[in-house]
Length: 231
Image (cartoon, rainbow, N blue to C red; front, side, top):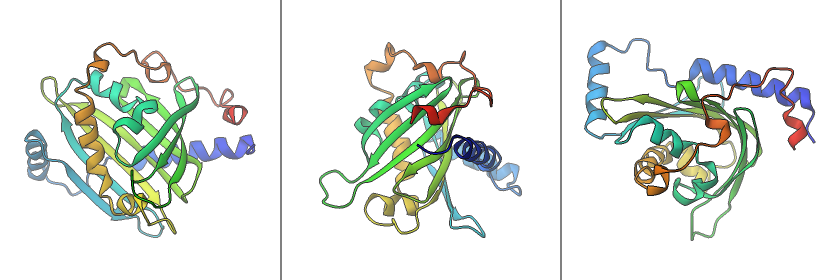
């Protein structure tokens, strides 16, 4: 079992970095450029930015796309973690290990189906902000060095949703197999396409949101963040 204090400190520190750093366009982005981006999104384009983070081993990949479905339906898809292995790119197995309040501990195994190469295990803490249609995650343990990031949903016209998927990653020593695609940013546009396809499934007509993704859930207080007890 990991020490409780160190895990909580890691979670809070990473969330602070994620909140300040993700899904931001360059500061010098002109209004004309912003208009151009939104016009491209409106036509169905998927836009990717990918760059190293100066002074670190991290890379930052960010993808923007529009899904032809209402925001509440898209929210059901991106929070459907137990079924990521059915539709999300590179994910061979997925399961929610425990939940508390608006936090879910989520384990995934990455690989390329049918290809004889290493598979990689990653466990992350997914923190949900349903009122903002935003999810932030931080790395707990697994076969890579570090990753953290976010999903953000925004209304885009009538019955359409802008999806922003942002990921920081340090994949030092793991750039083979599925992580070669993650490390180059190639897998992120496929994640948007996966959401576009999955949102058409009839199961989301009646699927109830898991408790951690419902608007009435709030982040647990610092005193209540006893995540290590669930290890």
